[in-house]
Image (cartoon, rainbow, N blue to C red; front, top):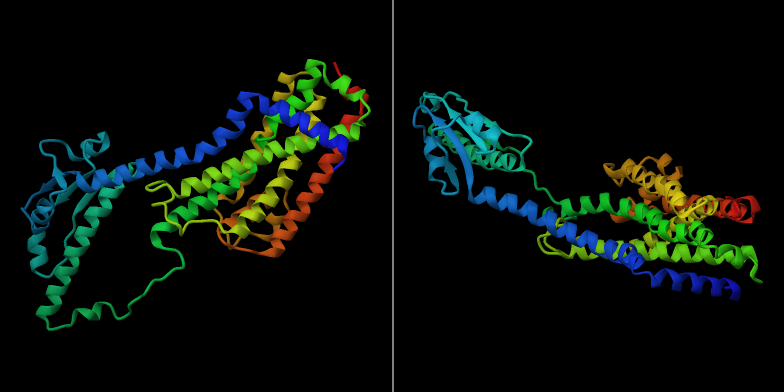
Amino acid sequence: MNKLVSVILLKELKDMLRDKKTIIISLLIPLLLMPVLSFIMGKTMNSAKDDVSQNTKIVMVDKGNSNLGKILKKDKSIKFISGTDGQGAVKDGKALLFIEIPKDFDSFISKGNNSGIKIFYDNTSQKSSIALSKVTSIIDELSKEIVGSRLTKRNIDIKILTPITVAKTSFQKEENAEGQIILGMLIPIFVLLYSATGTIAAATDLGAGEKERGTLEPLLTTKAGRRYILTGKLYAITIMGFIVSVCSMIGILVSMKIPGGMFGNGSTAIALGYKAIALIGVISIITTMFFGALELAVSVYARSFKEAQTYLTPFSIVPIFAAYGTMYMDAKNIPFLYFNIPLLSVSSVVKELTSGVYNYGHIGITIGWSIVYTIVAIIFARHMFNKESVIFRS
């Protein structure tokens, strides 16, 4: 590295790291955000499941004192609410389910006929949906017993109902699958978002901030040429942005190990391989430099610090749209076109890597295009930095 570039780089990094606000916003928040979020969301989800499993509030109208009603009443985890309108209780959240069993339910069943019950639930309530699954499983078990009894009376083997048995296996444990899916949704968002937003504060300060403080013009009169000054500033912005991205990734890795968190029970099964982390790191550096160059160019163009903040606001919004473009896609079936679209290509490859897919063709195309975009952004920043009408714009 050129000596002048290294001097400017160290100067800018020292200035930025002296600011406690920068350290808190750029380092601590990305580091702590995901672990705290994972812990809170995990506790909330587990709390809902535990609450329903131990205290399932139901309004039941059993007109014929049926066998099903007796089975439900024997379950100590089910609490019955009486003297209230069933549907109204579910709507108001006082009960999770309203079950209505007809008077002739047992009569129809005993005669070998089918009978039906009505269950009213709130499909907008997580607890109500969990309670529905719980009661439905009880009803399914009773149905199997009734069918088995009917077949036995006719001397028919109950196995006739299941001529084909299916053994389901997967490379990922069932309890970890949901956490892996969430991981594939979040990491592309964080890589793009922090590559863009992690450089905004530094770019604003090193461009418009210095213009406003009156320190940019004296810097341009030193023996260091504008090319070296721009390079030093760009390296400083990229390093700060990459540090923010690294902190966010560490936060995600820590959150994956939190017992009872949103990623499961802290199992080591949900993890990113070293190869995936390295490739995501390379892509993050290139993407961060791309955003840093664009943001520095915009910041230099702005007349003041506040004006630069206004101009740079879209940089914190656009990456989110790109990440959402692949959020609900299957990582193994992302269209080839996506790997040729700016930012969307980064989101696509990071999603693949997070899911354990190593398609080196996709990786090469994405890195290649990202380098091209970054070079164009640097040329644009250099053009803006060399224009007197931009530097001394008032």
